[in-house]
Structures are given as structure tokens and as C-alpha cells.
Figure 1 (tube, rainbow, N blue to C red):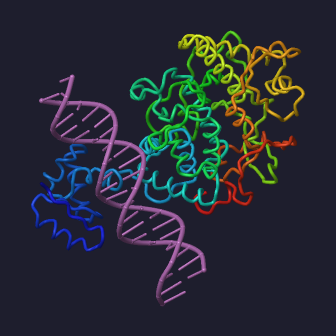
Figure 2: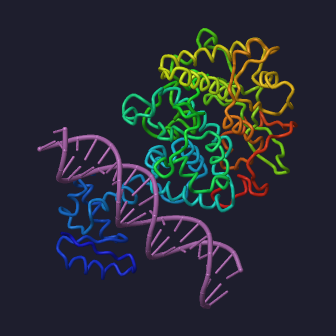
Length: 461
DNA sequence: AACATAATCAACCGCTCATCC
DNA sequence: TGGATGAGCGGTTGATTATGT
């Protein structure tokens, strides 16, 4: 049995090495010395990477193979970037984390020269700092992009995530996000972790092991498996492994799952037609930009315009419809909704939405009509799902049972939230072109200290 | 200057997964 | 098929450095 020698409590490496060497086959722990590094480098250069457990045997190092691998991967291998993360890299990390959660290795694969450990340390530092400040972890655009990412992911993968898919013909960055996730909690956690009892909810987002998310609808459906989202053709291309961000330039959508062909309503939407969701690669053009005050607190957010951005709201609407249908089906005859049925519903939903668009009807107006008699900015909260007379016949088809969580999500979508300078680099056109002031009474949103926006965090943020 | 606190970094631990026999 | 083994991943810890008082 090997003995483990630790020098954690002091820096007297020579002394510890002596101690370690007193025991044949003993393993040293703690910081690596330059001599050890040199030995490891020489060994790897001679024999190559891998077979780490043979390294201590063949090189004379008193380190376990695991430690050797880690040292090599994190510090010694060539082409490693040292130093602070660039703003661009930080932006990528935030985006990736919103989509992938704590998948540090996968994130590292998108950041050439960076290690999972580095990214993890960076993120944990950032999280701690922002949590202390009571700030949201993600910029608003990231939240939306991540949401859309998961929508598309769910769309692409009818069935729960199967890890085996990632290694074959499918995009590399498929999330292992919790599938059954309370939508509004998800949103709140993304926006402001303080609202969610901090770490527990944060982990609920990214680490299903630590906190099993509560199913939103008691089924496989949740906010993220909307299937009627329309994206542009160019974003529907599968992406390959490798450093997507830096090979192709920074592009959030480059890691998005491709669109399932069946979900695009080709008969209703000509390939060349430009829908709000297809006006750019990510399919989210025009989301950013509104401003307003909520509870006397300044929000900086992506403007959530129903007129110009029916995609996300449409997603929510159709999702609710789909959920209702599925739930009704289950509750009525306890029949499991088949994938084919769901697919059929999805296509139907798309047609409904696009028919409404063709007739000049927006989802916004649909909601207002549906909710006539209520204040204009009030989202209908009824769960009856019954049709009401005197409505736009097209929209009567969109017979949505408004789940509380779904409504909460919509109600709480902030209208303005600061975007950090480092993050807004790629969104200048968007923010300048679509920024507008919302005069509507804003919905209640997460509490964010006005002076602690995204763009005034020291250092990293 | 001395101390306290925060931030950063490096390394280890435990677990999971894939592969081999 | 199931156990052994190796490799990798994510979480955590502890040391060091930076910053504030």
C-alpha cells in the first residue's frame, strides 16, 4: 500500500520530497516543483499523453497518475493561455454557462488554451461576487439566448437528453440541464440568484444532483420544450466539435442545436421570408433594448417587444397550449401522448401562429383581446382554458391554459437591465437599433439595485 | 506597518463513465 | 455479464496574494 505524503501545510518542498523519497512508491502531494514539472514534460514529450498511471512508475515521479494528468492538463501542456480572461472570453463563458451549466470541460473545449479548472475558478469567483452584491448572474440577453437554446434543444430532442447523442452526429454542446425545471424559478435564478435562496437554487439550475427541480407541469413538458420556434436556415446547421467561438467568431447560436426539420412550417413560411425569429442567426434579433422603471428601480434588459418578437412569447403561448393539450389528454384518458401526437400539435401550433401573423394579428393583441376587460398590461392568469366568445377566431385557436408559472415568467420578464460593457460588444447594432423606451407600466420584476448593474462591477464584471 | 478580509489559484477528492478482459 | 482499471469531470479545500482598514 502506498503512503500519501502531503505538504499542504508548508512550502518546504525539499523537505517533503526527502520524506516522500524515504518511502519507496510513496506519493507526494501538494504544489509541484520545477524539477517535477521538467520530469513530467520530458516524459510526456517522449511517451505522449495518456496512460497516466504509468507515469510515476516510468518517470520516477512521486506523484499519482491522476496528479500528473492534472498538472499536465492545467499547467504544462503547450498552447495554454495564461493570465486573465479577456472580455471576449468572459462573454463566452457567461453564455456557455447559461446554456450548459457547470460543464467546465465542455466550456473549456470552446475556449482554446483555457482549462476547465480556470473557467471553474473564474466562474465561482464571479458568482460569489455577484451573489454578494445581489446581482443577477447572467445578463438579460444571455438569459434569453439560453432559454432559446433550450427551447431549440428540446425541439431537436423529443426525448429526454441522451448523452450518447452528443458524441455522434449531434452538436457537441448539448445541455445536461435539468429537464424538469420550474420555469419561473429558472428565470429568477438566471436573473437574480438572491431571490432563490442563493446557492440552492443556483444549483437547481445547473446541478440536478444537488437539488432536484420540481416539475413545472407534472409532465415532460416545461417551458423549454416549446417546439414551434422558427429559426433561420443558417442556424439550423449542425455544428462540429472544436472551438466554435473562436473559429467562427463569437456566435451564441453556433452552439445551438439545429432545428428539427419537422418543426419548421415550410408550407406556411417560405424559405426566404423573414420572420422576427429568423432575422438573424440566433433568431433573437430585436429582443434587446427596452427600458423602464420597475418599482422605482431601473432595469436594464432586453426589450421584450411583443410586436416585434413573437417568437419567445409565441413559444410560451404555444407551449402552454401544448401543455394543456397534453395534460388534458392525460387527465381524460390517461393515455400517454406519443411523440407523433406532440409533433403534430407542434406543427399545428406553428400554423396557428403564422396564420395569425399573416392576418396582421400579433400575439400581443391576442393576449389583450383574450384578456379583454382586464388592464392592458395584465397577463391573463386564468387556468380555465375555456374559449371566450367575441374573440379573434384565429386566436381562439390558441386556447392556452395559463399556468401560474408561465404567467409568472411573462410577468416577471424585466424590461430593462444593465448590460455590461464587456458583454455588449457584439450587440451594439442590436442595442442601438432596437433600444426603445417602454412606457407601459412595467410588470413586477426582480429587485435589482439600480447602482449595481451589469456594467459597473469592478474588474470582471 | 499590522492585521483582517477578499480574491485568486492550484491541487486533491470522490464520483462517473468507458473500455477491457 | 460483471468486475477491474483508467481517464475525466465537477466540487471542494487550502495556500497564496491582493486589497482594505
